[in-house]
Image (cartoon, rainbow, N blue to C red; front, top):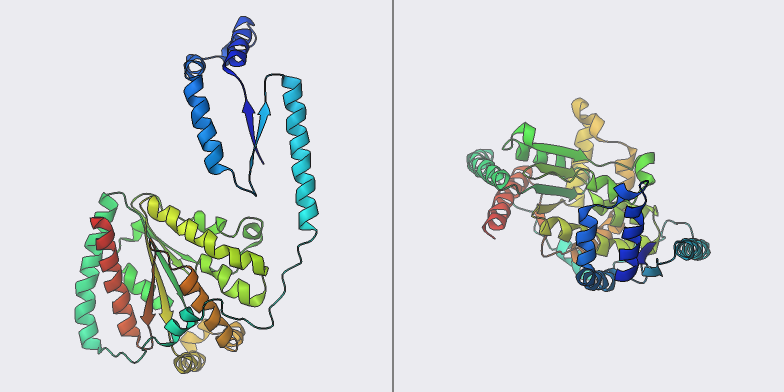
Length: 348
């Protein structure tokens, strides 16, 4: 609810004089108030532009004449009551979220892009170590340059279970001072987080100037797991594509460098890694029934990921698809691509 209390220049002058003449309220009037009064006409034109630019069907401005205090208060109360009543009427019609019977892609081109990604790349340990050190050194320099210019960096890692997100993040952070970054592992929302807009828990961790935040899974859960499991309604996850694009655009326009990676493995490779985790004692904590249940929904996730790639192809924060059947190849690609993207951003 957005109320604009409108006051003419004459009414404002009379109110300022009235406040000044009463010793009990004279403290309310400052030189800044009189300066604003002298600029009343210019500020009124700016206010009109502001209301036109920020009035939307769901969040319109309601202008109220504030010359008479009693009339003003009644008008505000009546407007608030009307908006509450309209909100309650509209929300009675919204059904509770239900799990979809089938996930149908909105943009099949995204799924085709995912399926056509070549996964047969190989990289020997010797070549990997040689090139890794070179690119880690370069990454260290670029992160420091970004910090000197007060440019923050946000890494977003998404991918299949067992695709290697955690391992890639650990190698990446080898190049960054531990005091300068935070890794945010994203699991199901807490009770507190459920009471807020879904982006709230990610906004909380956006880094301050010159710092780094790495999201191990992210806000894209809204259009992946929440869509597939029915944790939100169809209109909510469909609307989320626009919300997420706006969110990332705001980060980029603020000067934050946003890097997004999807780590892609084949279904057979994922199965091999799952079994390896079950058979290796020190890896068993990485596998649970939830992983196997998600695997049975592979095709549903594939369709949702395809839509994510197509509908969140934000020019300010593009997706980088990483073939991850070979972990060494994937890790090197992530470090190398990060260097290239940060360097390009610093040049702009």
